[in-house]
Length: 166
Image (cartoon, rainbow, N blue to C red; front, side, top):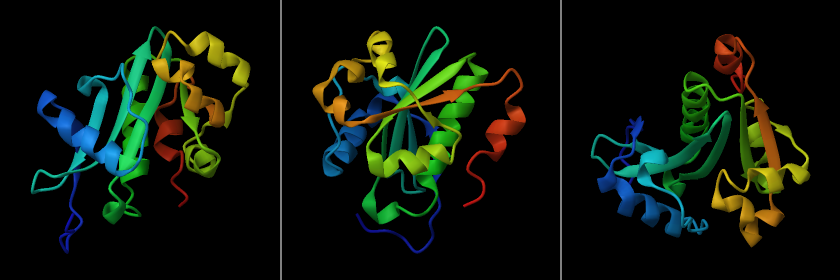
């Protein structure tokens, strides 16, 4: 994908028409295909030319949130897109009444999520999270660390400052 001189992008909710672009991005990044994901769970990053250069999904079941599917086109990395998508999903969960958010991350991504306030969680929790998303039952997830974010009763100030030191 050719990258224009300006790095303008915007985050928006995914549309049904974005499904093929999301799948193509995940395939290009060698990310696992997820059978129970739906485009309405995704936020996408699009350019003024309407190209999808990033995506990330969020699911909420009762008071539990799950962040998954984060991917950024390699030529658009280091522009703050991954952090912005993570922040957007945390804010969405907060507004929608989540008490806790979880993410599965490979060891090289743990620091990224810690910048947003996530902490390592006991892997024994995975058994309880299987109803939230199929990812928690997939074999590949056994190689991932489980991280947990606890929303505080008044997190508006805490979320706005998580990860702002980079």
